[in-house]
Image (cartoon, rainbow, N blue to C red; front, side, top):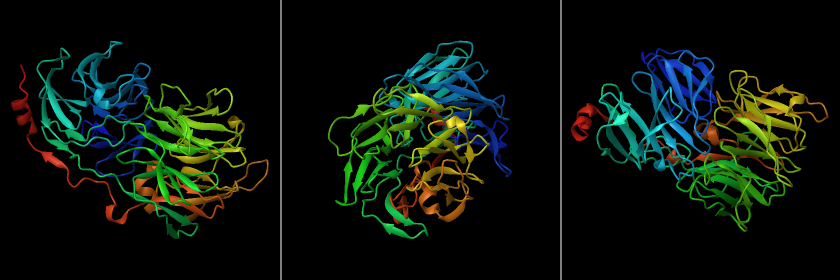
Length: 500
């Protein structure tokens, strides 16, 4: 859990987020305890009173007890805004957080704000900055363009009492433009810990892996590849790159070329092909939050916006008759659908209290598979399509993520989250849905464990091999060379940023 205070106030628990759930585990060991369902956190903190605050981006800030239970929305934000890094201030009467305004180009254009719990409006303390933390010396410490700054702050009056000053340069930030996180933490006793900005994106290659786990390299250059998707004819691969450019690229097998498709200054990711192979649909941060766009796969023509929503969206799959299924939302993943031809009317298709995602329509257009944590952990399910309320079948038995149909529609694959095994399930043909028991094909740890969020593989048109990403041997991890620890940092803080 990317939190300012991942430890519980008594120091006995550590909070974290995994697969659509907030969890905690004891420092003495044992199995994790599920607290509640939650979307990917936009920062979180565990404060006095055993209460956890979780930023949920465009859905505001939610609160849940440290013992678990039903979360409540504590604070909402306006259309196009996003909340990050909530922290309850002393006295438990006001919240400090980062607010990214509508139209802001980056998190550096955000505001550090404070809002009393009995108020519906916030007070802007700092224009330009993110991921602020209140520390016991009565300062706010926050990040801007890789630099940590501090400013005196009165927690009773909720006002700044001095001028901000830079203290530490070269602090790493989240590689995703969707997050306002800076990689630093300050202990109650004055120890500063931060990651220097020397992280290199994890380099990966594209490889074919057959059903026995035998590997065949693809001569594409090493990049930060995620989410490879094969074109319908199997001749091209659309893939996003989690490196300096954060764009969608296309690899051509026949020409052996890697060509950049998107050129936005913001994050572009999650490519999905249209059934005719002429266009690629993707998520783009050129609007906030990221919505769906498409453009011709050959690079001609212009980029066209497909959706307009105040919630983040990511494309999942397109049916053979041109219906797009996509995920929307941060706190819980709602599955939406929209025809790509005619009137593009967006409808909620599957909306529950659980987190659904990674959906895919079967090749014959009659079934929808997806992952959901409705049972308390991620499992794979199948429903009829488009009438998803006419039935439901659980496919996996010991946890499952990232389902994938075989081109024949007579087999379903998924990944086990515990040991990263690639599983196969037979799907006999016929108008009534039936399925066999899961069987293991091979251990996919090398391809899945290093990039679990973007693991989703592709499968060749003949169904005999999978297209996956593999870390470059010489660059197995993206971890920094060091983590910097500064003891007694409060002494320097008070000397360089005195209170008035």
